[in-house]
Length: 363
Length: 232
Picture 1 (cartoon, each protein chain N blue to C red):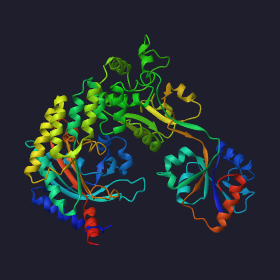
Picture 2: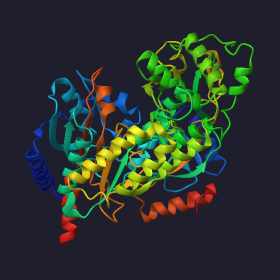
Picture 3: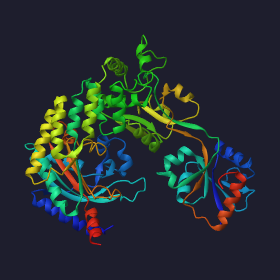
């Protein structure tokens, strides 16, 4: 691994490029309040982030990413539109003792822009594409907005759609729910018995804890509604699978999406956004005839992305983490903005991987 | 050099461990006064008995300060990340059985599976504005289990004792704890979720992958394994 001074210099080089694009350089604290990250990522983040405690802040984490503090900073006092760049260490526990470093540099570029969506996606991607062009990386793109739209358009109850959306980025759990909601697998054990009882609420034990009787009664009502709900039609499940199975160039996939939208009108607006983005990318000089698109790309990474997603990978090096990743995270600004929101897209590059690839290519 | 064997320093776990080794021709005994934590191993030349708290034995094995250790399989999995790279299970000893389970109020008639718990957690968070709390001291085991089963919107709150009381005291909505009989759960109006325990624990004889083994230590170990009828 390159020494830290060299990595820092490489980070500064990248940051200068981003600054030349009009990004304002910003810093974020390394110590982040744990509560915000826990509420966002759930308890799992404890297994990945370094947790410590501060007398004033309470539980704190060494920043596991920049996006959350940057969004927080922007929501507090940012202009619109705004471009930011930053560089510094992020910290991730590597409990499986893999070779991956627990502390590494990221250089980022984030764009908050209410007026342009496709244009902003294209700006960020084209910039990364240009900066990374000399390294011969393979590129993957995806669009979680298409999946969101497809799920929202299913013929089923709002509650089932919400459950599917909530678990979109946990593929196994998502599949279990989809199989159940489409009648391919039976309801969980005991549910039919419970609902068949004359008084499902009857119990010989007193209710303890904060969850109230009204909450339990409400869920029983929903379970009843769920039991009576018609299964999601096979044809719709098939289309959803087709969508997630797409793997083609961006040019070809646009045609395919148009075809899918005929049978799945709910994804129409998302397909329009996709097509507008493809056009904006082409206009920005990206060759979309060769740009790879995967329908399920982004589903297993951090859950805050909800639109365009991309990653750059060192070809033939599955041992290395992605060299760069990014995407759109409008929903995150909604969560952190407490009532306010702003469309946002950005990405990060790992400078030490660029040094390593350059070194290996030179050697 | 000697081969160091770490054994729980008190209680039934110590007695059962002594019995287990005794039945295999290796006599372990405390020495000195009743209160002195010193012990001796007879029947194997070069084996040294080290009396330790059961909870510290995983750490000592991982650090390689003891070669062998007897402790609960739950404690090793909880305290050591990636435990298989640090210790080896030589033999399950057949005592100290206890299950790590997740329990919720019995009056939650709508909750029997982890699937239910996940749905309830989502709704609980929406209504109450914070993630559903599960009181436990087994953070790693419970977190891994819940991730594997796709449960979200929960938080673990640390509870080092009297965990079953956490729900009634409204410091948690559910608990995850070791239970050997279930009576305490019933007394606290809780029930176990179906789908099997998070972990079935029992006392296990572990070998450290990190301890230094001299040739002499290896000879001691071979003699011990022959006596205990394990490994080889």
